[in-house]
Structure formats: structure tokens, C-alpha cells
Length: 150
Image (cartoon, rainbow, N blue to C red; front, side, top):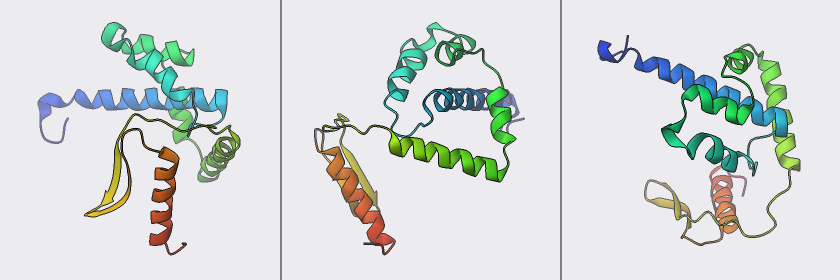
């Protein structure tokens, strides 16, 4: 049962199903593209297959739309069954694939205002329409200063 209220015990099943869907989705992108971070295909495909139609499809209908496979625990079982070394190796492969992926050649427009702060100290800030690459560099440098590497 739920830790605080027994009437919400079934709610936890949603967490498990959502986690399984995440593993299946991640496995799809990793199998097809080899990486997730900065993959320009991920956002548009999630929007098209998972978010655009909202509740017009059931959970069991929208997962295969993107992944091409029926919803299953296969990817979750694979993830939790990895040894530490196998997980490390998979992570290294994904990092190398992401590093070798093409980078955007022009400005990155997120149509967003972003402020990263630690308490009252603003580490980096970008106004709407600002230069994201400059923002990211400023944030990276702030982290490096904190680590004593800059």
C-alpha cells in the first residue's frame, strides 16, 4: 500500500509502468542512434508520438507508435540485469557516440529565459532570444571555477 494512505496503493503501479516505458523508449533511441544527449531526433519524436495526441490513445497504444514494439518489460529487465562493468561500458559507448554526433552549426534558440543560481549567486543567465552557447559556456566556467579547474 501507499506509505501514507492505503486508498492510493494502486497509484504506485503507474510509477512502475512509466519507468518501464522510459526504459523501452531509451532502448529504442540507443539501439537506433547510439546516444540520447543532444540527439536532435529525440524531442520531435517524443512530441509526435507521446505528447501531441494527449489522451487520445491509451498507454499501450502510444509506446509501440514510437518504439515499433509492443509495451513490455524487456528493456527494464535488461537494464536492471546489467553488471556494473556492463553499465559502465554502455555509458562509455553512448558518451562516445554523443561526442561524435554532429553539433548545431548556428545559434541554438530555446525560446526560453534561463537562470541558474545557487542561493543568491547567479551562475549563468540567458534572456529569451539570448545566446545559448554563451550561456552554456558561462555555466560551464562557473562549475569549473568551483572545482578549482579554472
